Image 1 (tube, rainbow, N blue to C red):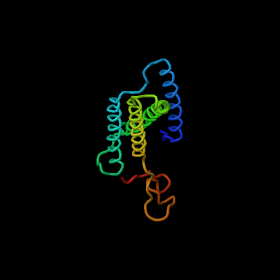
Image 2 (cartoon, rainbow, N blue to C red):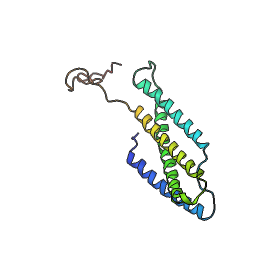
Image 3 (cartoon, one colour):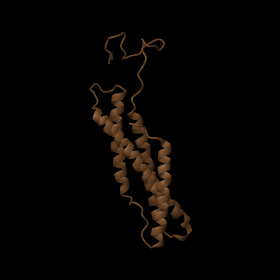
Image 4 (cartoon, one colour):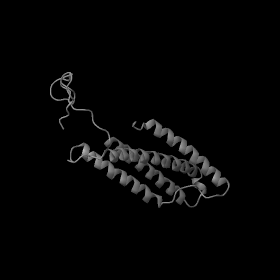
Length: 173
């Protein structure tokens, strides 16, 4: 599985911000409510980020050798997928609400109630938290490169390789 690239996340934020800004302008033109998520969605975002972080810590503890029993590879793969999904969802939420915030800042002095703006800023902050948790947990799921045993690296000193022709590779874990 490929690692997420920050440039792709930035592109998603910019596109989602443009779409959010256009959607806000259109809904305001037709006297419809601003398309912002309610504050109660922060609870859902927090649960998703917390679950992702807990699963990532389990993988990190196994990777660092603090767990004696074997980690289920399906669980590790699901944790990685959840981390990437959390980061992508957070990116979309951040971009959408950033676009809404930009449109609402344009009419800051014309509105008497700024509750929707603060709501959009809170949701954007929740998106930032989801992106950070997703990227951190993805890093937790990386397997470090094989360590070299003693001395200078060479074909005979690498861990896990066969020592001669016809021998099986032995990993001394």
